[in-house]
Length: 202
Ligand SMILES: [Zn+2]
Image (cartoon, rainbow, N blue to C red; front, side):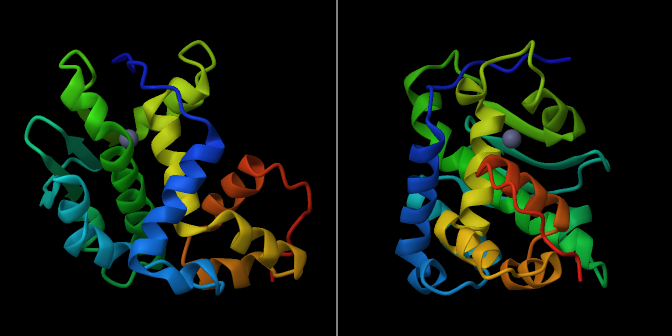
């Protein structure tokens, strides 16, 4: 198992704020209304302007969803995800993957430029999601994968919007459609924000 190198430590709050800044610059109404962030559009048309990293696609094997390569200055998304067809679960996984890779571009591009020893390539495979919660590994706030996933949650479900949905007793299904995310991502968000309320499914 490849080791994850430490990133500059980041507090959850700082990552949340950074994601809000990105939303504000591109789609400010997504910070006011409970609606989906157009991550597909941002990824394709805005990412390079903001970070210098060019979006692209790649024919990865099944277990890899995306990869950000700072040496090549490219951010690749798996063709398997892009060609989601009728599958809504895959389409929403594509959104989460794009949000995660955008996180790497905003959080880690400066670190990678400053320090050549810093990890230059982040592969989003099943291993990296396991590593993200491996307690033997790194403290969460120094783990670049944890940082990029936290950014992804905040980009697709801004904290105050998500909390408002929970306070209004929205069901999991309603939240899923409003923010256009998979239910597993909603569960992660509840834990991240330490919300103990149980959402109704229907
Ligand atoms: Zn990653």
